[in-house]
Image (cartoon, rainbow, N blue to C red; front, side, top):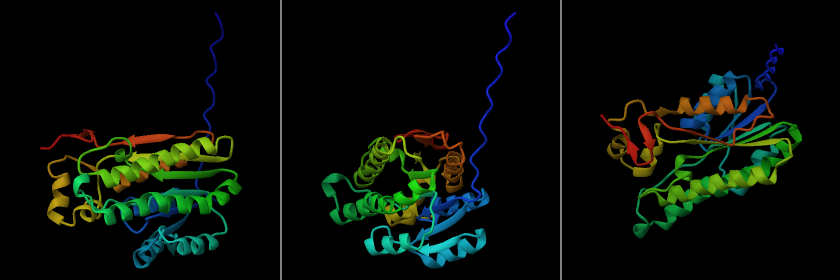
Length: 259
Protein backbone atom coordinates (compact mmCIF):
# COMPACT_ATOMS: atom_id res chain seq x y z
CA UNK A 1 0.00 0.00 0.00
CA UNK A 2 1.28 3.51 -0.73
CA UNK A 3 2.48 5.49 2.21
CA UNK A 4 -0.03 8.05 3.48
CA UNK A 5 0.75 11.61 2.58
CA UNK A 6 1.95 13.52 5.61
CA UNK A 7 -0.15 16.60 6.35
CA UNK A 8 1.54 19.88 5.70
CA UNK A 9 2.41 21.94 8.73
CA UNK A 10 0.25 24.96 9.40
CA UNK A 11 2.08 28.26 9.65
CA UNK A 12 1.70 29.93 13.03
CA UNK A 13 -0.47 32.99 13.39
CA UNK A 14 1.17 36.36 12.97
CA UNK A 15 1.08 37.75 16.49
CA UNK A 16 0.86 41.40 17.36
CA UNK A 17 3.86 41.70 19.66
CA UNK A 18 6.30 44.30 18.37
CA UNK A 19 3.90 45.58 15.71
CA UNK A 20 2.49 49.10 15.71
CA UNK A 21 -1.14 49.41 14.63
CA UNK A 22 -2.84 52.72 13.82
CA UNK A 23 -6.62 52.65 14.19
CA UNK A 24 -8.59 55.63 12.89
CA UNK A 25 -12.02 56.57 14.19
CA UNK A 26 -10.97 54.94 17.45
CA UNK A 27 -13.02 57.12 19.80
CA UNK A 28 -16.17 55.00 19.50
CA UNK A 29 -17.88 52.06 17.83
CA UNK A 30 -15.91 49.69 15.63
CA UNK A 31 -12.73 51.75 15.96
CA UNK A 32 -12.76 51.65 19.76
CA UNK A 33 -13.56 47.94 19.78
CA UNK A 34 -10.77 47.26 17.28
CA UNK A 35 -8.20 49.23 19.26
CA UNK A 36 -9.19 47.32 22.39
CA UNK A 37 -8.97 43.95 20.67
CA UNK A 38 -5.64 44.65 18.96
CA UNK A 39 -4.13 45.79 22.26
CA UNK A 40 -5.25 42.49 23.78
CA UNK A 41 -3.53 40.70 20.88
CA UNK A 42 -0.24 42.39 21.78
CA UNK A 43 -0.18 45.21 19.22
CA UNK A 44 1.21 48.61 20.17
CA UNK A 45 -1.93 50.57 19.30
CA UNK A 46 -2.06 54.21 18.22
CA UNK A 47 -5.63 55.44 18.64
CA UNK A 48 -6.54 58.24 16.23
CA UNK A 49 -9.67 60.39 16.05
CA UNK A 50 -10.85 63.97 16.49
CA UNK A 51 -12.27 63.57 20.03
CA UNK A 52 -9.10 63.51 22.08
CA UNK A 53 -10.84 63.27 25.46
CA UNK A 54 -12.54 59.99 24.54
CA UNK A 55 -9.37 58.69 22.88
CA UNK A 56 -7.26 59.43 25.95
CA UNK A 57 -9.64 57.65 28.30
CA UNK A 58 -9.68 54.53 26.12
CA UNK A 59 -5.93 54.59 25.54
CA UNK A 60 -5.33 54.66 29.28
CA UNK A 61 -7.58 51.63 29.76
CA UNK A 62 -5.94 49.49 27.07
CA UNK A 63 -2.36 50.73 27.28
CA UNK A 64 -2.39 52.46 23.88
CA UNK A 65 -1.37 55.90 22.66
CA UNK A 66 -3.96 58.58 21.86
CA UNK A 67 -3.23 61.05 19.06
CA UNK A 68 -5.73 63.56 17.72
CA UNK A 69 -6.38 63.23 13.99
CA UNK A 70 -8.82 64.64 11.47
CA UNK A 71 -8.42 62.63 8.28
CA UNK A 72 -10.18 65.34 6.28
CA UNK A 73 -7.50 67.90 7.16
CA UNK A 74 -4.16 67.71 5.35
CA UNK A 75 -2.26 69.55 8.10
CA UNK A 76 -3.66 67.20 10.74
CA UNK A 77 -2.60 64.15 8.72
CA UNK A 78 0.89 65.59 8.17
CA UNK A 79 1.37 66.30 11.88
CA UNK A 80 0.06 62.86 12.81
CA UNK A 81 2.38 61.12 10.36
CA UNK A 82 5.40 63.10 11.54
CA UNK A 83 4.83 61.87 15.09
CA UNK A 84 5.09 58.18 14.19
CA UNK A 85 8.41 56.37 14.16
CA UNK A 86 7.02 53.09 12.87
CA UNK A 87 3.75 51.73 11.45
CA UNK A 88 3.09 48.07 10.68
CA UNK A 89 -0.70 48.16 10.44
CA UNK A 90 -3.16 50.83 9.33
CA UNK A 91 -6.82 50.20 10.07
CA UNK A 92 -8.74 52.73 7.98
CA UNK A 93 -11.94 52.83 10.00
CA UNK A 94 -12.86 56.53 10.15
CA UNK A 95 -16.09 57.12 8.25
CA UNK A 96 -19.82 57.43 8.60
CA UNK A 97 -23.18 58.14 6.99
CA UNK A 98 -24.88 61.49 7.47
CA UNK A 99 -28.20 61.29 5.63
CA UNK A 100 -30.78 58.89 4.27
CA UNK A 101 -32.20 61.08 1.53
CA UNK A 102 -33.13 59.93 -1.99
CA UNK A 103 -31.01 61.29 -4.81
CA UNK A 104 -33.82 63.63 -5.92
CA UNK A 105 -33.56 65.34 -2.52
CA UNK A 106 -29.78 65.13 -2.18
CA UNK A 107 -28.07 67.49 0.23
CA UNK A 108 -24.79 68.12 -1.53
CA UNK A 109 -23.14 69.34 1.66
CA UNK A 110 -23.94 65.97 3.21
CA UNK A 111 -22.60 64.19 0.13
CA UNK A 112 -19.41 66.25 0.35
CA UNK A 113 -18.97 65.44 4.05
CA UNK A 114 -19.61 61.74 3.43
CA UNK A 115 -17.11 61.56 0.59
CA UNK A 116 -14.51 63.65 2.42
CA UNK A 117 -14.32 61.40 5.47
CA UNK A 118 -14.94 57.98 3.89
CA UNK A 119 -12.95 58.32 0.67
CA UNK A 120 -10.65 61.33 0.53
CA UNK A 121 -9.69 61.02 4.20
CA UNK A 122 -8.87 57.36 3.69
CA UNK A 123 -6.79 58.12 0.61
CA UNK A 124 -5.01 60.97 2.40
CA UNK A 125 -3.90 58.86 5.36
CA UNK A 126 -3.12 55.79 3.27
CA UNK A 127 -0.85 57.84 1.02
CA UNK A 128 0.90 59.36 4.05
CA UNK A 129 1.55 56.06 5.83
CA UNK A 130 2.20 53.75 2.90
CA UNK A 131 5.98 54.38 2.96
CA UNK A 132 6.08 53.24 6.59
CA UNK A 133 4.01 50.16 5.82
CA UNK A 134 6.38 49.26 3.01
CA UNK A 135 9.41 49.87 5.23
CA UNK A 136 8.05 47.57 7.94
CA UNK A 137 8.67 44.57 5.69
CA UNK A 138 5.32 43.06 6.67
CA UNK A 139 2.74 45.81 6.47
CA UNK A 140 -1.04 45.55 6.68
CA UNK A 141 -3.42 48.03 5.08
CA UNK A 142 -6.93 47.25 6.25
CA UNK A 143 -10.11 49.01 5.15
CA UNK A 144 -13.31 48.84 7.14
CA UNK A 145 -15.78 48.91 4.28
CA UNK A 146 -19.43 47.91 4.29
CA UNK A 147 -21.89 45.73 2.44
CA UNK A 148 -23.10 49.17 1.24
CA UNK A 149 -19.91 49.16 -0.84
CA UNK A 150 -21.04 46.02 -2.62
CA UNK A 151 -24.73 46.71 -3.30
CA UNK A 152 -26.86 49.85 -3.48
CA UNK A 153 -30.19 50.55 -1.81
CA UNK A 154 -32.82 53.29 -1.77
CA UNK A 155 -32.12 56.27 0.42
CA UNK A 156 -28.48 55.43 0.85
CA UNK A 157 -26.79 56.85 -2.23
CA UNK A 158 -24.37 59.23 -0.50
CA UNK A 159 -23.09 56.45 1.75
CA UNK A 160 -23.19 53.62 -0.79
CA UNK A 161 -21.33 55.78 -3.32
CA UNK A 162 -18.64 56.51 -0.74
CA UNK A 163 -18.31 52.90 0.40
CA UNK A 164 -18.19 51.71 -3.21
CA UNK A 165 -15.25 54.11 -3.49
CA UNK A 166 -13.55 52.50 -0.50
CA UNK A 167 -14.11 49.05 -2.00
CA UNK A 168 -12.55 49.95 -5.34
CA UNK A 169 -9.71 51.75 -3.54
CA UNK A 170 -8.84 48.51 -1.75
CA UNK A 171 -9.07 46.51 -4.99
CA UNK A 172 -6.87 48.97 -6.85
CA UNK A 173 -4.21 49.09 -4.14
CA UNK A 174 -4.07 45.31 -4.06
CA UNK A 175 -3.21 45.37 -7.77
CA UNK A 176 -0.72 48.21 -7.44
CA UNK A 177 1.09 46.69 -4.44
CA UNK A 178 1.27 43.09 -5.64
CA UNK A 179 4.73 41.69 -5.00
CA UNK A 180 5.40 44.18 -2.20
CA UNK A 181 5.37 43.23 1.51
CA UNK A 182 2.00 44.90 2.20
CA UNK A 183 -1.30 43.08 2.50
CA UNK A 184 -4.51 44.87 1.48
CA UNK A 185 -7.52 43.63 3.45
CA UNK A 186 -11.16 44.71 3.36
CA UNK A 187 -13.69 43.89 6.08
CA UNK A 188 -17.27 44.61 4.97
CA UNK A 189 -19.88 44.43 7.74
CA UNK A 190 -23.62 44.47 7.24
CA UNK A 191 -25.98 45.54 10.03
CA UNK A 192 -23.92 46.59 13.05
CA UNK A 193 -25.56 48.19 16.06
CA UNK A 194 -23.34 50.91 17.52
CA UNK A 195 -24.07 53.98 19.61
CA UNK A 196 -23.59 56.56 16.89
CA UNK A 197 -23.80 55.28 13.31
CA UNK A 198 -27.57 55.34 12.72
CA UNK A 199 -28.03 58.31 15.04
CA UNK A 200 -25.58 60.36 12.98
CA UNK A 201 -27.42 59.33 9.84
CA UNK A 202 -30.99 59.99 10.98
CA UNK A 203 -30.45 62.70 13.63
CA UNK A 204 -33.24 61.01 15.60
CA UNK A 205 -32.90 58.45 18.38
CA UNK A 206 -36.34 57.00 17.54
CA UNK A 207 -35.41 56.53 13.88
CA UNK A 208 -32.01 55.11 14.82
CA UNK A 209 -33.63 52.60 17.17
CA UNK A 210 -36.11 51.61 14.45
CA UNK A 211 -33.28 50.44 12.21
CA UNK A 212 -32.58 47.55 14.58
CA UNK A 213 -36.06 47.05 16.04
CA UNK A 214 -37.11 43.41 16.08
CA UNK A 215 -33.74 42.16 14.78
CA UNK A 216 -32.47 39.35 16.93
CA UNK A 217 -28.77 39.86 17.67
CA UNK A 218 -27.53 42.40 15.14
CA UNK A 219 -23.77 42.53 14.92
CA UNK A 220 -21.99 44.68 17.48
CA UNK A 221 -18.66 46.47 17.20
CA UNK A 222 -16.82 43.65 18.97
CA UNK A 223 -17.92 41.18 16.28
CA UNK A 224 -16.28 43.30 13.59
CA UNK A 225 -13.17 43.82 15.74
CA UNK A 226 -12.90 40.05 16.12
CA UNK A 227 -12.81 39.61 12.34
CA UNK A 228 -10.29 42.43 11.94
CA UNK A 229 -7.99 40.87 14.55
CA UNK A 230 -8.33 37.45 12.90
CA UNK A 231 -7.39 38.81 9.47
CA UNK A 232 -4.40 40.74 10.81
CA UNK A 233 -3.01 37.76 12.73
CA UNK A 234 -3.03 35.28 9.84
CA UNK A 235 0.45 34.30 8.61
CA UNK A 236 1.61 37.20 6.48
CA UNK A 237 1.53 35.26 3.23
CA UNK A 238 -2.25 34.87 3.72
CA UNK A 239 -4.24 37.86 2.40
CA UNK A 240 -7.91 38.14 3.32
CA UNK A 241 -8.99 40.13 0.28
CA UNK A 242 -12.60 40.64 1.34
CA UNK A 243 -14.48 39.36 4.37
CA UNK A 244 -18.24 40.02 4.42
CA UNK A 245 -20.04 39.56 7.72
CA UNK A 246 -23.68 39.99 8.60
CA UNK A 247 -25.90 38.96 11.49
CA UNK A 248 -27.70 35.69 10.86
CA UNK A 249 -30.94 37.70 10.75
CA UNK A 250 -29.75 39.62 7.67
CA UNK A 251 -29.60 37.67 4.44
CA UNK A 252 -29.06 40.74 2.26
CA UNK A 253 -29.41 44.51 2.41
CA UNK A 254 -33.18 44.25 1.84
CA UNK A 255 -33.81 40.94 3.60
CA UNK A 256 -33.84 41.21 7.39
CA UNK A 257 -35.82 38.97 9.75
CA UNK A 258 -37.65 40.95 12.41
CA UNK A 259 -39.61 39.51 15.31
